[in-house]
Image 1 (cartoon, one colour):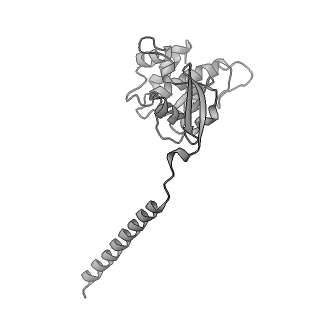
Image 2: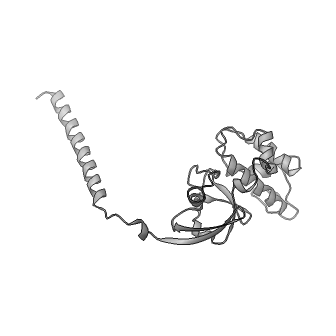
Image 3: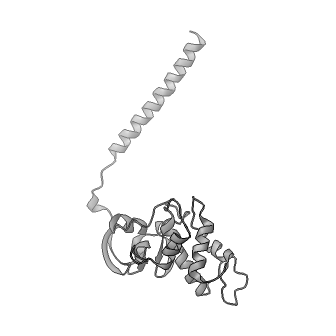
Length: 210
């Protein structure tokens, strides 16, 4: 038996072992009992979405993001990382922005949810939507709905004197600045890098000078 024969034999053993493991995994998967869809835990959830009452029966594990996209067909809100790191799924709940991929729909019984579809229409844009178009605050557009929802909330936060990590003094009124906007928008990732244009859009809507 040559060295080449030994190497071929080793490869064969490894290949056979991998194939056997795969077959066993498939058999184990098929051996699991199939749970009828009707027996999955579900709950009735009532939401006020963009001013409309919505009554849903959902699997209790359904995220707010999936409830909006898959059940209400409001696909403006995007699923990006699905880990709360990119901000593409940002919506406003009772006036405050949240990552809708990180919260369950059943946790928002009776809450008022505003998505990008609820801010404006093609015929009558929200001022922030119009400013994003004017300043080219997007390129691919995937993150834009979350960016706009977050931007609207940022201006509301500053107006309400809610401090951020870069607010220098907590006693006077929160002031509008480029640093404040960048800090507050830092959870919304734009992979196209349109950050300067986004800042220009938010600055115009604020009526302030960054």
